[in-house]
Length: 192
Image (cartoon, rainbow, N blue to C red; front, side, top):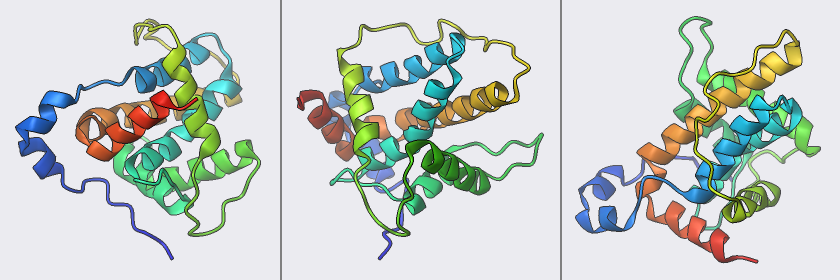
Protein backbone atom coordinates (compact mmCIF):
# COMPACT_ATOMS: atom_id res chain seq x y z
CA UNK A 1 0.00 0.00 0.00
CA UNK A 2 1.42 3.34 -0.97
CA UNK A 3 0.38 6.60 0.61
CA UNK A 4 0.72 9.46 -1.87
CA UNK A 5 2.84 12.35 -0.71
CA UNK A 6 1.02 15.65 -1.04
CA UNK A 7 3.46 18.49 -0.33
CA UNK A 8 0.90 21.27 0.07
CA UNK A 9 -1.98 20.05 2.26
CA UNK A 10 -3.87 22.74 4.10
CA UNK A 11 -1.32 25.38 3.14
CA UNK A 12 -4.00 28.01 2.64
CA UNK A 13 -5.51 27.22 6.04
CA UNK A 14 -2.10 27.60 7.68
CA UNK A 15 -1.44 30.86 5.87
CA UNK A 16 -4.73 32.40 6.98
CA UNK A 17 -4.44 31.36 10.60
CA UNK A 18 -2.99 34.27 12.57
CA UNK A 19 -2.74 32.14 15.67
CA UNK A 20 -0.38 29.67 13.96
CA UNK A 21 1.85 32.38 12.58
CA UNK A 22 2.37 33.77 16.08
CA UNK A 23 3.92 30.52 17.27
CA UNK A 24 6.11 29.56 14.31
CA UNK A 25 9.35 31.15 13.31
CA UNK A 26 10.80 30.87 9.84
CA UNK A 27 13.83 28.98 11.03
CA UNK A 28 14.77 25.99 13.10
CA UNK A 29 18.18 25.96 14.77
CA UNK A 30 18.39 22.21 14.30
CA UNK A 31 17.51 22.35 10.60
CA UNK A 32 19.62 25.46 9.91
CA UNK A 33 22.63 23.87 11.59
CA UNK A 34 22.18 20.71 9.51
CA UNK A 35 22.23 22.76 6.29
CA UNK A 36 25.17 24.86 7.50
CA UNK A 37 27.09 21.68 8.35
CA UNK A 38 26.67 20.50 4.76
CA UNK A 39 27.98 23.85 3.56
CA UNK A 40 30.94 23.62 5.94
CA UNK A 41 31.77 20.09 4.81
CA UNK A 42 31.78 21.25 1.20
CA UNK A 43 33.99 24.21 2.05
CA UNK A 44 36.48 21.91 3.79
CA UNK A 45 36.28 19.48 0.84
CA UNK A 46 34.89 16.59 2.85
CA UNK A 47 32.83 15.49 -0.13
CA UNK A 48 31.56 12.08 1.07
CA UNK A 49 30.21 13.33 4.39
CA UNK A 50 28.55 16.33 2.72
CA UNK A 51 26.95 14.13 0.08
CA UNK A 52 25.71 11.60 2.65
CA UNK A 53 24.10 14.33 4.75
CA UNK A 54 22.56 16.04 1.72
CA UNK A 55 21.10 12.82 0.33
CA UNK A 56 19.30 12.31 3.65
CA UNK A 57 17.50 15.68 3.39
CA UNK A 58 14.47 14.40 1.41
CA UNK A 59 13.97 11.57 3.93
CA UNK A 60 14.24 14.06 6.79
CA UNK A 61 11.74 16.44 5.22
CA UNK A 62 9.25 13.69 4.41
CA UNK A 63 9.58 12.12 7.86
CA UNK A 64 9.12 15.47 9.60
CA UNK A 65 5.92 16.00 7.57
CA UNK A 66 4.48 12.65 8.69
CA UNK A 67 2.81 12.23 12.09
CA UNK A 68 4.63 8.91 12.59
CA UNK A 69 7.91 10.25 11.08
CA UNK A 70 7.94 7.76 8.21
CA UNK A 71 9.33 7.99 4.71
CA UNK A 72 9.50 5.77 1.64
CA UNK A 73 11.12 5.60 -1.77
CA UNK A 74 7.99 7.06 -3.40
CA UNK A 75 7.74 9.92 -0.92
CA UNK A 76 11.47 10.66 -1.22
CA UNK A 77 11.18 10.91 -5.00
CA UNK A 78 7.93 12.90 -4.86
CA UNK A 79 9.55 15.39 -2.46
CA UNK A 80 12.45 15.82 -4.90
CA UNK A 81 10.06 16.29 -7.82
CA UNK A 82 8.18 18.95 -5.87
CA UNK A 83 11.01 20.95 -4.31
CA UNK A 84 14.00 20.65 -6.67
CA UNK A 85 13.91 23.33 -9.32
CA UNK A 86 14.25 22.08 -12.89
CA UNK A 87 17.48 23.17 -14.55
CA UNK A 88 16.68 24.86 -17.85
CA UNK A 89 20.33 24.78 -18.94
CA UNK A 90 20.72 21.02 -18.69
CA UNK A 91 17.09 20.05 -19.20
CA UNK A 92 17.06 17.85 -16.11
CA UNK A 93 13.72 16.69 -14.81
CA UNK A 94 13.21 16.92 -11.01
CA UNK A 95 11.46 13.53 -10.97
CA UNK A 96 14.43 11.89 -12.71
CA UNK A 97 16.76 13.67 -10.30
CA UNK A 98 14.73 12.33 -7.38
CA UNK A 99 15.11 8.77 -8.65
CA UNK A 100 18.86 9.29 -9.18
CA UNK A 101 19.30 10.81 -5.72
CA UNK A 102 17.34 7.96 -4.14
CA UNK A 103 19.61 5.41 -5.84
CA UNK A 104 22.63 7.33 -4.58
CA UNK A 105 21.16 7.40 -1.07
CA UNK A 106 20.55 3.63 -1.17
CA UNK A 107 24.15 3.00 -2.27
CA UNK A 108 25.53 5.20 0.52
CA UNK A 109 23.25 3.90 3.27
CA UNK A 110 23.92 0.29 2.36
CA UNK A 111 20.25 -0.58 2.28
CA UNK A 112 17.64 -1.17 -0.33
CA UNK A 113 14.18 -0.03 0.65
CA UNK A 114 11.24 -2.23 -0.09
CA UNK A 115 8.91 -0.81 -2.69
CA UNK A 116 6.11 1.10 -0.99
CA UNK A 117 7.38 0.43 2.54
CA UNK A 118 6.89 3.25 5.02
CA UNK A 119 9.86 3.29 7.38
CA UNK A 120 11.26 5.77 9.88
CA UNK A 121 14.64 7.04 8.60
CA UNK A 122 16.20 6.66 12.06
CA UNK A 123 19.80 7.43 11.12
CA UNK A 124 18.90 10.60 9.23
CA UNK A 125 16.66 11.88 12.02
CA UNK A 126 19.34 11.06 14.60
CA UNK A 127 21.85 13.13 12.61
CA UNK A 128 19.37 16.01 12.50
CA UNK A 129 18.70 15.71 16.23
CA UNK A 130 22.39 15.87 17.08
CA UNK A 131 22.54 19.29 15.41
CA UNK A 132 20.44 20.78 18.22
CA UNK A 133 23.48 20.71 20.50
CA UNK A 134 25.77 22.46 18.05
CA UNK A 135 26.85 26.05 18.47
CA UNK A 136 24.97 28.35 16.13
CA UNK A 137 26.90 29.33 13.03
CA UNK A 138 25.97 31.93 10.51
CA UNK A 139 24.70 30.32 7.31
CA UNK A 140 26.34 31.44 4.14
CA UNK A 141 29.72 32.09 5.71
CA UNK A 142 31.32 30.39 2.70
CA UNK A 143 29.13 31.53 -0.19
CA UNK A 144 31.40 30.36 -2.99
CA UNK A 145 31.96 26.66 -3.39
CA UNK A 146 35.56 25.46 -3.71
CA UNK A 147 36.88 24.95 -7.21
CA UNK A 148 37.77 21.37 -8.08
CA UNK A 149 38.45 19.25 -11.13
CA UNK A 150 37.64 15.93 -9.45
CA UNK A 151 34.47 14.48 -11.02
CA UNK A 152 33.25 13.01 -7.72
CA UNK A 153 33.76 16.34 -5.96
CA UNK A 154 31.92 18.22 -8.72
CA UNK A 155 29.01 15.79 -8.42
CA UNK A 156 28.99 16.15 -4.62
CA UNK A 157 28.88 19.95 -4.84
CA UNK A 158 26.10 19.80 -7.45
CA UNK A 159 23.92 17.33 -5.52
CA UNK A 160 24.49 19.02 -2.16
CA UNK A 161 23.63 22.42 -3.59
CA UNK A 162 20.44 21.18 -5.28
CA UNK A 163 19.21 19.34 -2.19
CA UNK A 164 20.16 22.04 0.31
CA UNK A 165 18.41 24.69 -1.80
CA UNK A 166 15.33 22.46 -2.09
CA UNK A 167 15.33 21.79 1.67
CA UNK A 168 15.66 25.48 2.42
CA UNK A 169 12.76 26.25 0.06
CA UNK A 170 10.67 23.46 1.62
CA UNK A 171 11.28 24.74 5.13
CA UNK A 172 10.58 28.42 4.47
CA UNK A 173 7.56 27.87 2.21
CA UNK A 174 5.88 24.99 3.98
CA UNK A 175 7.48 23.47 7.05
CA UNK A 176 7.90 26.64 9.10
CA UNK A 177 4.12 26.94 9.28
CA UNK A 178 3.25 23.24 9.37
CA UNK A 179 2.04 22.04 12.77
CA UNK A 180 3.14 18.44 12.16
CA UNK A 181 6.67 19.44 11.15
CA UNK A 182 7.02 21.78 14.11
CA UNK A 183 5.71 19.14 16.53
CA UNK A 184 8.16 16.56 15.13
CA UNK A 185 11.06 19.01 15.43
CA UNK A 186 10.06 19.66 19.04
CA UNK A 187 9.92 15.92 19.76
CA UNK A 188 13.38 15.44 18.26
CA UNK A 189 14.72 18.30 20.35
CA UNK A 190 13.66 16.72 23.64
CA UNK A 191 14.61 13.12 22.80
CA UNK A 192 17.70 11.74 24.49
